[in-house]
Image (cartoon, rainbow, N blue to C red; front, side, top):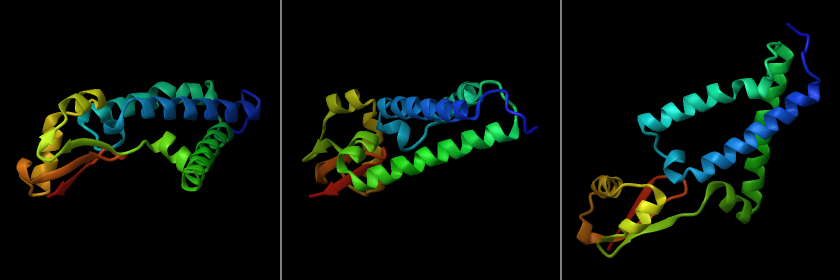
Length: 152
């Protein structure tokens, strides 16, 4: 239970590599993945966790190995949170930036396609904001995946 199958430092290196690669993958997958999960997005997240579990521990089933990986992942997450709180460039790189997806009653469908967001999502945001399309001043896809609507 307490015997490690690998050197202790390998757990830290494995955890760091998996964390950083998944951070890049999630960031590149778009704002929608980060924001509101569809059932398909949730499925991908669940399968990702299952798919990388052996990569984290290298087959080690010890308590110490699992705790080393957990501490590594939490530490990296705290480090990234600290970095994004203290650096605008880091925050933009990790979290992304808001994107204008509509203005003056017009939805920018080409922009939505590039961001892999449907027009229906903007229409839903309009309904939630109790705003008709003609009344829309701006529609902004926020970095967390939500869509903000500003009325004229």
